[in-house]
Amino acid sequence: MLYGTIKPLKKKKASVFLCGLRRLCGNAKPGNLVDLATDCSNMETYGKILLIAMPAFLLLVLFEKWYGWYKKKETVHTMDMLSSLSSGVTNVTKDVLGIYLVLISYPWLVNHLALTHISSSLIVYIIAFLALDFAGYWVHRIQHVTNFFWNGHIIHHSSEEFNLACALRQSISSIVRIFVIFLLPAALLGVPRQVIEVVAPLHLFAQFWYHTQHINKMGFLEKIIVTPSHHRVHHAINPEYLDKNYGQIFIWWDKWFGSFQEELPDVPPVYGITRPARTWNPIKINFQHIWLLIKDAWRTASWKDKFTLWFKPTGYRPADVAAKYPVYKIEDVYHFEKYSTPASGAFKAWCWMQLLMVLLFVSYLFGNIALIKNIDSSYIFWYGGFIFLSVYALTDLMDGNVSAFICELVRCSMGIGFLVLQNDWFGAKAYTPFITYLLEGYFIISLLVTGWWTIQIRKRVMAVQ
Ligand SMILES: [Zn+2]
Ligand SMILES: [Zn+2]
Image (cartoon, rainbow, N blue to C red; front, side, top):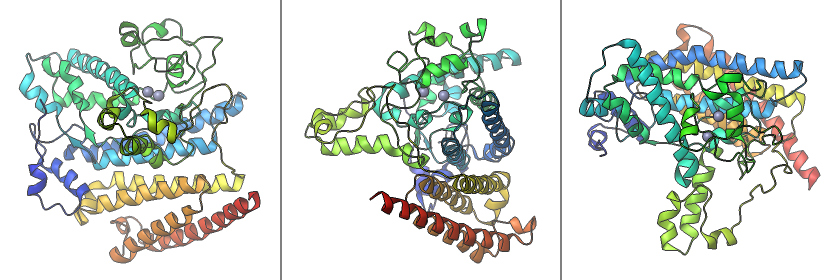
């Protein structure tokens, strides 16, 4: 049974849709439209956790790059890493803003369906961890094998490399959350929502470390937990490895439910997706697959396909549109060209600097949610939009598109607009009185330098033609 109603949205005078979604969680109480991650009381806490987690993940990503250089086994390439990091920025921004709708919530499940109550705190935490891992396995498997749900996971597999940064590629496109239903075992056992709230981020962060090629097989641990070797198989597109090892922490689910595949010594994993993304832009990648499905449903002459293609196995396309509008698919995984774009040392340095600026901007948001909301409740959404636009402009430039200048122009105008209207940067004057001058200078320089790079891109394109 799906629980929830859209009515609270209508009651509030939500001027924009995003604000409407956000305000739903203003009514946060069990039984209302509310989810663990969108509970407003948790939003600031989650922002604070990310303030610690983000630099920690960034340092580990950089350490892996250094280690690869030191061991002469490079697994981290700058443009791909920047793309992964910017994807991580979009995902955490979306999560902190709580831009999604929950049709069924864990608090509702546990309040209505709990059959028992567990008092021992250690046992309840262990059960919560196992329940989350069980739910994670099935959600992950459904995402892989169903056309529609694959769109919500494709970003995670979109890198053609395999490294710690890939772990940060997480979705922004799943707007409606329905998979809480898989936490039914936890709800029946009466695991309190507060326990799930604590364990869920730990369970998520514990999936970071195994995205690496620098750790080989790990002895007896291979039988119990998901190791780098198991997860290399999961990210590989070799026919032997495709759609295997869905486990998140424990590997036994794969062994029990028939989806386990060991990494074979004579089959080196080739990473990515069979219909390559061919872009560094995480926002485009998040919607590429669903856009193809929408186009296919529109174009196909088969009425049956129009309604059913969404729930067919991942990759399914109606025969008529597949013939008329073919999509490139990697057939021979050992002979295809990985996506790359021309990037000089200076260009990479510029992209790095821009990414660091985005990280500074987003850190300010995460550390000051209450302050920003106090000034004006709609400001965090404007700020979120600015972050998304920043990522889009940066990765569009990395892709070598001249349209990056237009994106940068809109972004810098937005930034300067905020500064002029507020005579401040979302309350940051309290920390740095000169912030408006600093940021005005930054936006002007950023626009000029991006303009210069787009002229170079234009010259390069003309020279090829
Ligand atoms: Zn996956
Ligand atoms: Zn992964």
